[in-house]
Length: 563
Image: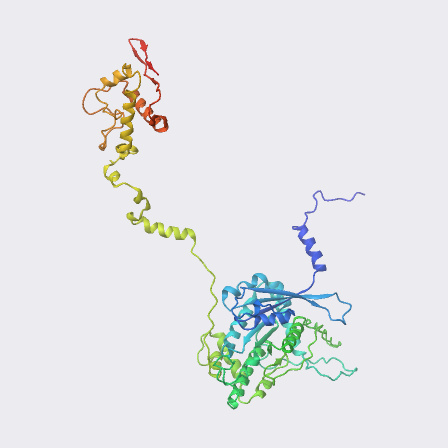
């Protein structure tokens, strides 16, 4: 029995080679993790990037006056720990993208390098704040966090929505299962509890994408500035140590405000200095957040709960809220109660509502978080000059069209007017096109050339014997001396409605039938004399002239003179 086959072959898939190469590269490729480093200029982003990638800081990066790139990029491979022998040599590739300003000209470039659809599950955002400018903390946080929300929304596709939902579930599970590191070993009979406590008040109310966020306050060692430092140079300006409780009260108040905002986004808070120990702790937590395991699958009733997957980069540092130059507050540990314990009189709920009012109304006055924070930390420094915007020139065609319309309305703006002779405009007659409408035949050089040509012809050998052409020219009373027949006298113009060069003169008899041939001969000899340089020397060379042939009574005669 024959098996029936389709007469038409199957259509191969589009981009066949691309699909094959992608499948091979994906099977051998190294996983990639990205860090988006956000911060204003001169906030210590280069130091953080070198610490995260474990690369030495270059000499040009130490220069405070250097210019940042529109989008900076660097990468490094993450090696596997020595005890993980079963994994490949390189665990992942860590990339750091640096954005130097909140200006939309710079932030709009990042989605081209990190599309949210592919990058969200493998990306962490780090916001850098500078302790030398503490009065700008709330304003910068609000700007950066709003940008993160906008970037994470992407194009709103269905696939992106599913990725965002998975990220939110993963971060929520991480917050709920957080346990403070302990040096005591767990008993061997301990089992994972199936009871998961809900999130506390003001916790994870924003950041619907679930992207890990770390707020890093750099230059924390400048908080304890001395009295001899000028305002703004020591971080807190006039709020220096030695003024009693005001110094500690305000620095604690700044920390409480930052912790309240971080709690709403499920973010962590770190203070860093140039000390390698603080930067190393920050790097360990960054890897811990990047390799956050996915949320456990929901279990049916009556089954054993599933323990969360172990993070291959555990974070074993305890939270620290006492040392002001090395604050460590991981995500999932903080709460409104712990924030209020730091210093009495702080209402975390009130500040959370003030933050919401700022998000709803960007110009909220009196009751917004930015206004309240300005009373806590007054602005004691000049604002940094904004980065230069990108040059957006006027299109070339639009520029030319604008100037053309302006010049067309003003006749004196025509650039060709500088090359025109005013006598030509007054002497030319309407309806005359060509040299008759100008004074080109009135040029003295042309008149002198015609005269020299006639004198040269008369003085040639054999000129004493008049030819038939000379006789006819002497009998023609219309041709003036040195001018072709049919042309007006030198210095005059043809009146409007006048006839062309072949028109007969207004008075006298009719022109000879051979006047046109004589005109042609005179003009031909004139132009030949201009092209030949031999006629300008001492003795003129022999010139050969051919007299026109005329027929009389059916017979023709011709004369030929030559040297």
